[in-house]
Image 1 (cartoon, rainbow, N blue to C red):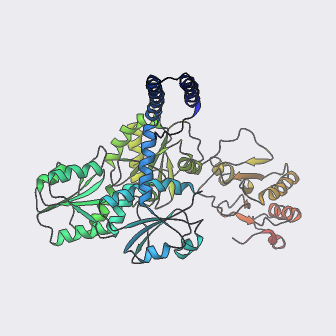
Image 2 (cartoon, rainbow, N blue to C red; image 1 turned 30 degrees about the vertical axis):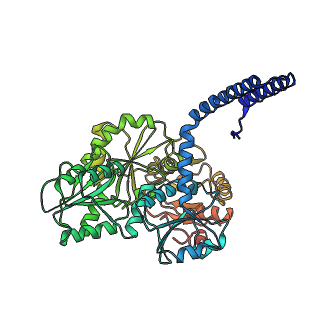
Length: 542
C-alpha cells in the first residue's frame, strides 16, 4: 500500500478531481470488459497522479527546507533535555552527580528565548561526553517540584552537585552555558595536541584564553589552572607545542610560558604581560575580554553593567547609522582600551535604549554619545558632532575627570506665568542667583499627592500676586536635574530666602492654605530673614 501525506489548498483539490475522473474512467473500462491493457492504462494514470503530487511536494519542501531543518535540529536538541515533574525531579537530582536544571514557564518570554540556547548547549555537551544531565522543569505546571528547589524568578538555572544546589553564574548563549558547565563539572581547560586539533578548535570558539607551557606543571601553570577554574565566561585552552600555539595566536613569542586572549574582532590578539598570578590573570581577562565596541544585548547586559571598567561610553544609534560611526569608535576605543569601555546600543531596541535615553531626558533622532562613571554616578553627554577629534577630547576629559557632568533639562520656557516654570537650565539663575525670595514646588507626574499640593500652591501664588521680592516656581523633577536640587520625596516645598539661597527651608506639604499664607507673610515681615517663632509649625525638619 502506498502511503501519502495529506495535501492542502489548490493542489489537494486538483488531486481529488483527477482521482475522481480516474475512478469513473476505470469503472467504465471495467464494465466494457477491458483486460490487461486496461490495467496497464490504470497503472500509468496512477503514476502520473503521483508524479504531480511529488512535484508539488518538492516545491513545498524547497520553500520550507531552511525552516523545517532548523525546527528539526531544535526538536532533536530539546529531546536531549530531560523533562522533570513532581514525580521524578528529586529522584533525578539525587541520583546523578551533576544536573543542570532550567526552571521555566511557557508564558515567560525570557524562558522562550533561553530554551533553544539551553538545548543547543545540551547537544554540545553530549557530543563532548559530559557527565552533566541537562534537565528542565515547568515551574507553573509542577509547582511542588519548583518549590522543592526554591525556583522563584524565571527563567532560573541551577547546578546540582550530588544533590546540592549551586547558583548559575555564567552567560546565556549556548557556548557560554557549555563553558560554564564544563568548568563546574571538572573540565575547566581543553588541551590541544596537534595543529589539526587547534584548527578544529578555532572553528567552534570565537573568544578564548590560550596558554603555552613547556610542561604542564610548575607555579605558572598552577596559577593558569586556578584562573581557568575561577573564570566563568571564557574557554581556556592549553598547549605545549609552539607550532600548535601559533595556529591560535600567530604572533606568539617562544618562551617558557605564554598567555594570550583571542577575540573575534579587529583587536583580535591581546598578550598578557604580567606575572603569572591568578588575580592578575583574571583582571587582565576582565579588562580585555570585550570587543573594542561591545553591542549591548539582553543576554550580555548584566555582565556589561557589572564590568570592572567603571568609565563607559554608550553610543545610541540605528543599525544604519552605526555603520558610519563604527570605525572611528573603534579607533578611539583602541586608544583607551582597558580604561574606558565602549558600548553600542541599538536605538530600535526600546528595552535597552529607552531607559538610558530617559535618564538623559533625550529623544533619539540622531546618534547620541553619552558616558557614565559608575563609581561616582555621574553622567555626561557629547553635545557636539561625534567626529574623531571630538570623541577623543570627550574620552580624555572622561578619563581625567575634567568633563562637566550632564543634568537633564526641559527646554527653557518662552513665557512667564504666575507660577514660573523652572527647568534644569534655569535653576541657577531663577532660583540660586535670584535676588528675590523663591517659593518652589518640586513635583513629579507619577506622584499621587502632587495634584492636591499644586492646587494649594496655585492659590497661594494668586494670594501674593504682585507682591515684591517674592517669586513662585514649579519644577518637574522627572524631567529636570540640578546638582543643588537633591529631592527624594514628592511633592516637596522649598522656600529659598533672598539672603540665604544655600539653605532652603523645607515647608510641610500638609500645611493648610492659611498656614502657608502666614508662613510667607511672616517671612516677608522679618527684616533679617528669620521666621517668627509663632509660624515655625509649617516648617519640616530637614
